[in-house]
Image 1: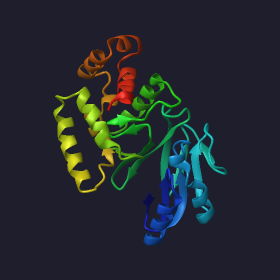
Image 2: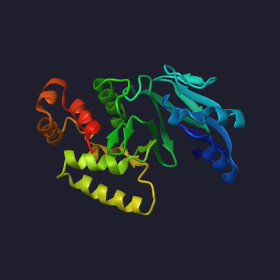
Image 3: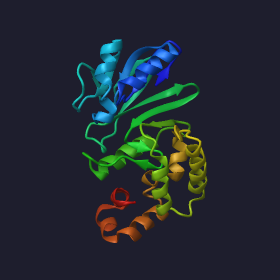
Length: 241
């Protein structure tokens, strides 16, 4: 949730009740509901919240969504809370996934990227191809260093375990892992991350780095040769325990 002290927007509300509780506690009016993709853990609370508050819903143009809503695609702008969010098409996790980017909020850029980019990870490819997801991640990775990466799940520790398997000698990755372990031990979130940090520690943003390419080759040489390092990493992560 993002708010200005009076009005609020909520991103990907899978459940309405925690949002309604927060609105009541903070004394806020819900102005908008912003949705990145169609999965129920991101849309499950949309209809109830809209009916209870009259909030405007914004979501992807190419996916099944709880109607009515304003449909958006790459190049569009979403104006809410007095802010302008640029919309990016980021297919891969789903075919019509979108992301929302604000150039300046509270001193730094802000990215709501749904399940496309996680800290130290990326979403599974349920509907898109590795090439689509890589292009989507390239789009997000090009954003400014200070961009706060607000993804939709606290998957950081499990992602870091895999990232360390790919790049065990990455010192920034080791340090970040230690920080995140300490945060989660206190039941604190690891998020938001930053784009500068993700470029240093996220294997899916680093699939063209020689050390990461070598790790993919060592894991599955045939797949790396045929499909490339990124596709090999994604399949490796799917199977990783």
